[in-house]
Length: 85
Image 1 (cartoon, rainbow, N blue to C red):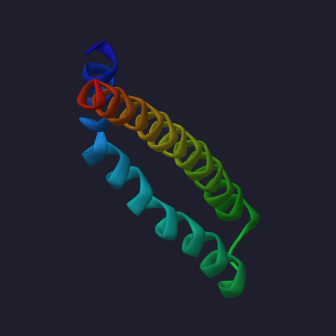
Image 2: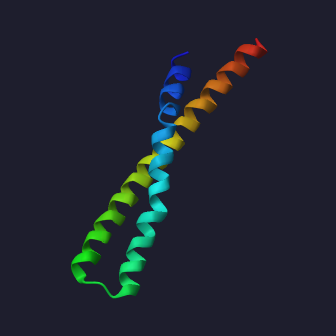
């Protein structure tokens, strides 16, 4: 039962995870636009910082997805075992 509650707790943050994932393409495109437009080095440093933040948030989002999937699979296996016996 504790595994099910933990999985639901992790899945309850899915809206935040989707918002973080939506930020990725925006951050990827701004660095390319600044580079192709020939803007100053100062602006390029700011877009690099945004890209680093996006990489961090993407890694956190993937960790939550993997962790919740593992907990859900354990909960499903436990339910299957209870059904069998």
